[in-house]
Length: 355
Image (cartoon, helix red, strand yellow):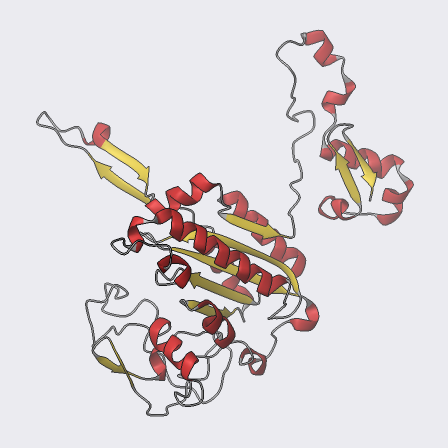
């Protein structure tokens, strides 16, 4: 997970901060799932079906982002798949747009993100999806026992949100989206809620995928490190202990294990990718002088290993050699991290060649 986190930070160093943070959660009522269930079956009994359908939805979302360019031309992106403790999978996308499509002003946020109830008469389909998937809570005074409530009696997602007549940049956080006080109320989970309870969404994606589809604009570079750590935090873990009738030894009985739900088990059995990052991050070898790793076959003799000049060559040593002998490398004066943009490493010949 740490390596994946460092790869993601490398994208930020090359292309800048991400522009969009997108979360999609599996909907167990999708028709693709329901139509393949027996009349006596339930969704939680078919983790294989849930995993296969959700993967198809993720691939379709990728096509919308990369090929249809619904947010604009993408410079780089990454996503990870996670599984809630009750089993439903969800995915986090971080999208970095090219320069001409960067979301630089609050006015541009409103093109992709909405945080208000739609018109129930003119947008009936969207209205029903928002009520079904994008209303938070209720929590706080309306429901103090909701799962989002922290120890201090406050919602950890800061709902209900304050009303705002127009979108503006937030401080070290997501933007403050437009949430006008329209006095429009909807009846959700035995309470009446307004715009302050709406989770930010994209109307097109919400209507198309019919599931919880939270979208946020990353407007502050200070928030980037937290976001990447959040989506690269890895799988859930659990600590437990086993007791018997004999004397309790807390050290011996302590166990640390992974929390694996049936959909995650099915996902891994099918061999589906847990994460993806594009563009590819090239991992460069680093070592002190004379302390590079050496790989050899167990059948080789020590003298043959010591007399083999190829075994000492690494990406780093050949980078220095190229900057001494290759006219193109000398002329370009590249840093080590910039070198793979113009040269390709050949593992077989253990040398750099011009792209």
